[in-house]
Structures are given as C-alpha cells and as structure tokens.
Image (tube, rainbow, N blue to C red; front, side):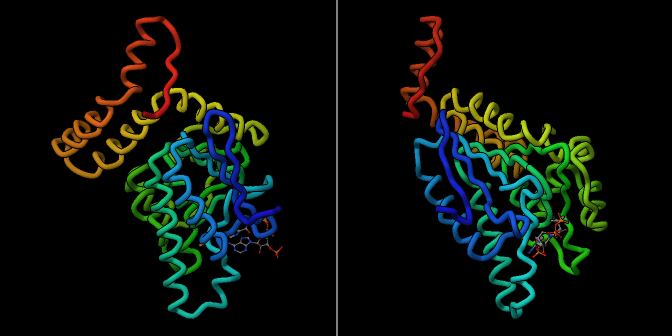
Length: 260
Ligand code: COA
C-alpha cells in the first residue's frame, strides 16, 4: 500500500525513510509529520536498526518544507501548533540514537533543510538546490534552522543564507560545508547505503555513544565535553561488543557485533 512516508529496512540494519508526496514536492503536511513522528518512535527503540537514511520520493524534491497550501487555511493558533510539530519531529530525528544521513535528492527548502540539518551527515544529488527560504515568505526558520545552520557552517554564512533566503546548488553547499558529498542523482542512494554499511559494521553501542558524546559534548565548554566523553566511553566498557572487538583483533578476523 502507498504510504505518505515510506519505510523499509535494508541489509545491515539500515532503515530508509522516504518522504512520499512527490506530487507536492514532498512538503510536510500535518499528516506526514504525524507519520514521521510515529516512525521515529519505532526506530528509537529498535535495536535491530543501526542507521537511518532520510530521502524524498521522485527526482525533483527531497522536501519543499512546510505545506504552504495547508498553511494558507490555518488560523494563528494552528500555525503555532504546526510549527511546534515540525520542530518536535526535527528534534526527535536529531536525537535518534542511531546515526542518520540525509540523501538530498532534489529541492530541499525551509523545513526540508531543517530536517536535513538534524541528520548526522548530509549528501546531495548534483542537481539539488537547498536553502532556508523562510524570510522570503515573511517568516523565519522555526524548526531549528536559525540554530543548527550557523553551528554547522558558521554564523556569517548562515546569516547571509537566511537573510537572503538564497537557494544554493550542491557545489556551493559542498563548499560551505552544508553537505559532505555531492553525487549524480542516480548514485545518491547507493552512496548513502555504502556509507551506512561502512558505519553499521562497527559496534552499534560504540557508534551511538560516539554520537551522544559529539552531540552533547559539543554544546558546552571543553571540560564538560570531556566529562561527557568519559561517561559515554564507560558505557562501552562492560559490553560484549568490546570483548568481541579485542578477540577479533587477536584472531585476525572481522568482528561480529551484536549490540550487547
Ligand atoms: N507546500 C505545498 N505544496 C508545494 C510546496 C510546499 N512547500 N512546494 C511545492 N508544492 C507543490 C506545488 O504547488 C505544485 O503543486 P501543483 O502541481 O498542485 O501546483 C507541486 O508541488 C510541484 O511544485 P512546482 O512548483 O510546480 O514544481 P517545480 O519543480 O517548478 O518547483 C519547488 C518545486 C519545490 C522548487 C517549488 O515548488 C518551491 O519553491 N516551493 C516552495 C519551497 C519553499 O520555499 N519552502 C519553504 C516553506 S517554509
């Protein structure tokens, strides 16, 4: 059955979430947000999932942001609620314990880029365009864009992009450090899968604790960050995976991690 958010698990425990409203440039309707919210809840507590790829259906759009047609019929209170819902879903994506990658297959604007910014790694099709376009609509990014973009690419460039509402191409996004890779459209998902498989062969507890250490530790001063790293490291010490890593090294074979 066709769903508004497509979900499948691939080899290596990699989940692929596909925003599936190609006819509306995969814009974030309330129905789509609720479905995404539900899916993310399921992923968070699924130990079988070792990585998540987020992409859009079709070749034109990753996600064109908030559903502007739906928005046009809302009163102020509904707008507030919907902006809060987008923010909640974006933060839930960011806080997934598993590593995440956005495979930006086309237009990626407003809330679409805010979703991508909440992923650990971003890659884009050569043809993709990206931007926080909100000021051109008389609003500002409301799902973390004003906070996550400057943290990623620096305050000055983020201000320029947000003030101008500019739509940049994949090459510029690469130069700015907004994405890590650009790939031909037809290779994009394969590249994302390759990356996730490279990650998922490592100890899942270790990868998740590394993510936590980077995300939480990066928010404060170095001393606090180092203390957070220590706590995250200590989680890996009593694990079977740590023993398996040592044993596999001794036996000169690939480790088989189970996430225990
Ligand atoms: N909300 C609702 N519908 C949207 C949408 C959005 N954010 N973005 C695109 N759509 C719809 C279009 O209205 C169109 O529907 P229609 O066929 O019923 O008219 C369909 O998706 C395809 O879009 P269209 O503009 O015809 O295709 P395109 O390939 O020329 O352009 C975009 C695609 C995404 C570049 C362009 O639609 C766009 O700029 N959208 C707005 C993006 C934006 O600023 N988002 C930030 C919101 S805060």
